[in-house]
Length: 189
Length: 311
Image (cartoon, rainbow over all chains, first blue to last red; front, side, top):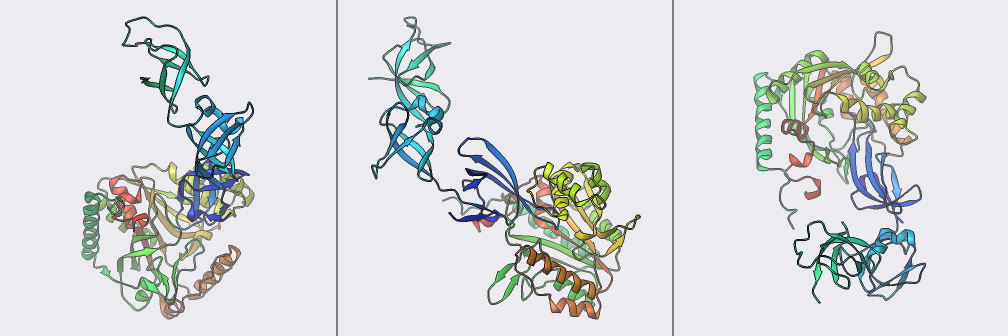
């Protein structure tokens, strides 16, 4: 991969730092009077998700990271790996539990996910922003309650638990925002 | 595509026009002559911390009008000022743009203290009612960091910088620069004009040096900060051509160590100094910084019609 000098740093650039692929979030140029200039850089470690702050001497460089975001279809889980397919090349990739992380509770077969590939292998998986999943278990709510004041927990087919209004019943399909884990609405079938 | 639009508001564009006319009126009233020197020239500055933009076949876009203005002074111009564009490679960020506007002026016969007073007189017009406070670099630095930058050991200063997140492998002067930029400057009270004088001799650039009370050499140089921005950088100018030759050579040695291109010494400047640069003090101000301070913004984009990303 190419090396990037501090003057090429910009938000979104993927670089290697301490052996991990990172994405630059912010790059601030700091220069005291007529002295040595520095770049204060905020980076997201793409493996751990942690945000790092580092300062570099201006003119220093970092190796680029071979990181790509690809849309892939989730196919199945074999008990150990989650399998994804590139819909244009039909190439398949398997992601381990560390790569899938919290996304696993939202993965439904055939949904299109954003898979981040590092050196060609899945590093992390982002589920679609909205998923439609079946409720497999929830307490029967009171008939006629349509306001849904407090709500109740419901377990979805993927194992995720979300709060739903009291009138929503087992067997119904609900739409959920995966970024917040919030119930959005019922899907009329 | 909306990137064709200016990033500065119309108010900010008007504020620039107003500031430029205030500055011109200020110098007209003081009989300081406005001059115009080349922005494209054969030679560029040798300072290893400033990278000129090379124009193949021509030379360099000027990082400051200093060398040419000193030639005018040596030719007997008397007090002069200039408002011009200046260019620095690699300087881009929230507060920096590779092309910016410089206000620079020189006062033959002025001591550094007289020039500080004149800067404050200009600031009184630009930033009415803002008080000023004077600091010595050494004491200010020691108060913020617990280290005397002139006598603390290299190891102590480097360790002090690393403790606050500096990259490893800095030189002593870079460690002091780091602590100055990240610890000392941000701790200055925002709502006053902070005048800092007596910089370490290694940060003299083109300033004269003299021994401090304990004999440690310090530079006759000042900076003025306001609202977290460095607004002005002034010198009692070096007039000794031989010392200027030594500084060109030293800059180029540092450039070789840093694997930067070397910059040929400007023979016109040296010849002018051989003839005789009058004793003088000079100061440079970033016009965008003045506008940012006036508007309370810390983004240069807010005061430039078209910053580099849209130029």
